[in-house]
Amino acid sequence: MKRRNTLQALAALAAAGLARPAFSQTTKIVFGYTAVTDFTSVFVAADQGYFKKRGLDVELKFIPLNSTIPAAVQADSLQIGGPTPSVYLQSVDGGLDQVVVAGGGVTSKSITGFGLVARAGSGIKTAAHCVGKKIGVPGLGAFLHVTFRAWLKDQGVDYKKVNFVEAAFPQHGDMLRGGSVDAVVSADPFMSRITDTGVGYVASYYSTFLPEGQPTIIHVARRDWAQKNAAAVRSFQQAVQEGATFMQNPKNNDAVRATIGKYIKLPAEVLAKMQISPPGPVVTTKQLDYWVALMKEQDMLKTSPNVNSLLFK
View 1 (cartoon, rainbow, N blue to C red):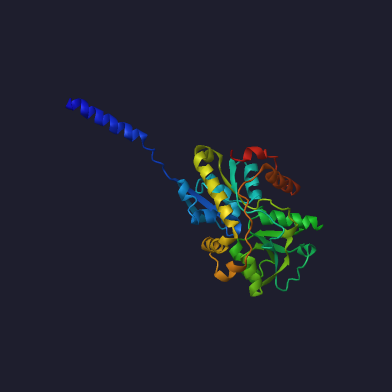
View 2: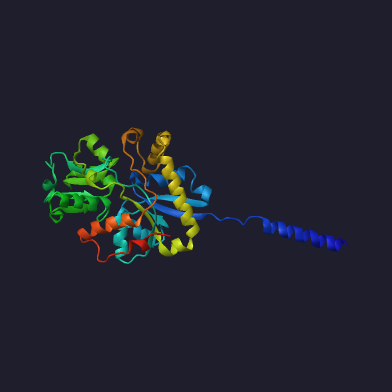
């Protein structure tokens, strides 16, 4: 009798153990970002605990040049990174198999947070004045480079007659001051710092010619990693969407700006007046089609990618 009771007790304990939920292991993700507000929904998701509550351990890693992000994702030093659409599409065109899992900022005609900043005394005022000049861009083939060339073309200027050099955002002010470039295509907070010191001036807020709602930053992962970690990718998407919702609530403005300052290391006075790119956490085939067409015009793609296959589903 005692043996039977013991066996029954052990069976009950075993059944109870099977009934308990399985232990959920936290997924580690190193996410690569650059020093722009287009990553704010990710910053917010990290600070507000939206990743953590979904079982994600997301480490945010600063990357100086956007153009290096796809290679870092491919090498698995980043599991997810935020290249510009043009940098991403060129990497796919070059053979990397990576998919879009979410989006960062999007364009808006009300945003004047980036533009052409000329060196004081350079005399640059129009697109035509850029011919023969040396202009720094934060990533050859990246968002600002491609869209600025599109603006030059729209203004009747051959962008091939402009000498572009790659320069990370933090270097822009020093390069203008030292005279190594005539102008830079820059963005806040670096643009405001340059104009506040008198080293340069905004020659054009060329960004206002861009169509509304086009992605400026997209979040990508290696296809095999995303497929293997599909549940984690879904959780990442949900967290970023929740971060975007938090951003859009005016009551959270101070908290959002404080979070930006934490990851981009900005002083309070700069944070208080800078514009924040509106979020676009979901990327569509139509948006990628826009970028493919723009890049085709600039002979940046050898192939015509099937954009539908580039979105993680």
